[in-house]
Length: 431
Image (cartoon, rainbow, N blue to C red; front, side, top):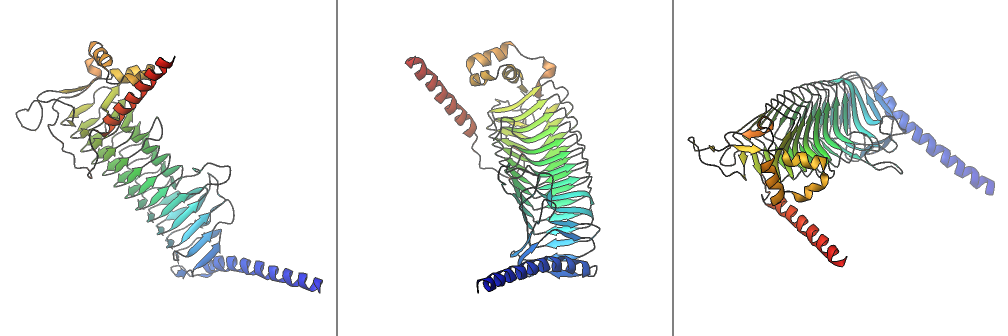
């Protein structure tokens, strides 16, 4: 009797394993048998990868359709041309920082309305041209003993003229990483909780438009890139690291930065070794430093608003940059003949930045009477100053609106300095 029960249990387990294997095989076999150009509709339920799609097909599911990875490689690999994945969830529980949930090669593929949860990376495009990724939800998941930030949300390498639209990415290393890839468009995406929200390296003619980047270490980094268009984006609350910025341009040349909002970042926009960029009609508000420039030349900074930053702008080792018609809320101007600009220039001296670079502790003396006096006595060479010869008399940028109070960061800094002063005083009394 006991032997019979054991045999029955073993038979049930054998049948279950056969059914699981059959389900896995049937899904891949459905893909293999399907005619090019046809559609496979997946019923609700869980399916096991890995899957390979190498011909024009549409695979459509629902929010209750889940494909789960069966190893450390891609859950789904698509190749060739004309594959559409639409409307289901993908989970990669055992990925590494070099693996992705969905691997893409080829042309004219469409990934739409997918929910991807991954312990590695989200979507990887290699040698992929003119594909579209739309309305993806990509999030990182923590593996035992590993960092939450393993791979990138969307990773492009040697992939050109792809469109990434209305995707939401969070808790990965980089939200979108673009390397040696030209002409890609990133439009209307939201990225948070990453190292770099958007990261472009060795790329030409990238387009970053209407993205929202918040609570990352750096909102967007553009490095060794040419002719990047950065327009109508929101960079807010990049403060988690001492080197956090809304936008970092490093050796980035010939780009345009127009109509963006930089608010509540440690540094709104940081330019280093960059030239011939055009920054205009942006709003820099409530940042610790609005704009910082280092070893950069021949950039144009025109018709931007600098409101409520602790420090509006700083520059070192930079020459030939042109500032004109910007609004600086701490400038005491005199109305010029055009009734729109001041006849008095606005000068930005790098003295304080130079001092705290050599002696970081002097940050506590920011805006102190003694530091201001030293700044007046030890003025930098006029050729190294940023000078707005005709500052605007009022705000003018056409950014996407803001509810930021101008006095917020200055008040907060003053409060911090007051608390620090009281602490030092109390400790001194006790000693």
